Length: 96
Image 1 (cartoon, rainbow, N blue to C red):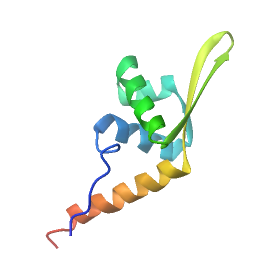
Image 2 (cartoon, helix red, strand yellow; image 1 turned 180 degrees about the vertical axis):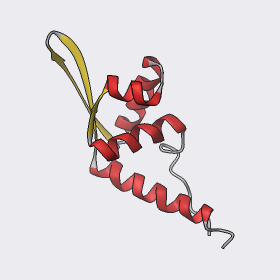
Image 3 (cartoon, helix red, strand yellow; image 1 turned 90 degrees about the vertical axis):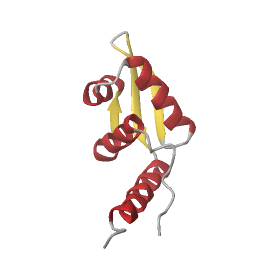
Image 4 (cartoon, one colour; image 1 turned 60 degrees about the vertical axis):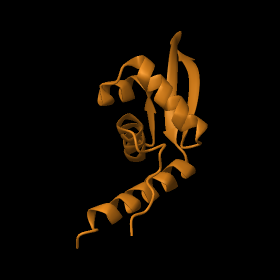
């Protein structure tokens, strides 16, 4: 009845990052920091965990002589998010 929830996505900040990227496809680090209210250090750690899992892509570059980090959702990340939502729904519908 209850399906396993992906431990990579089952933390509030990582779930928030992926949720944002699902809707915008690509976002700068500063946008994610602003939307999640996370500290730069914590956001950076969580982005790296998502990148290591293959759920997001990260491009580091310079724009107008300033460092810029762009994050984008990968097909694997989209699939993992959709499965996570389906599995979470099994918990919500358990009593019906």
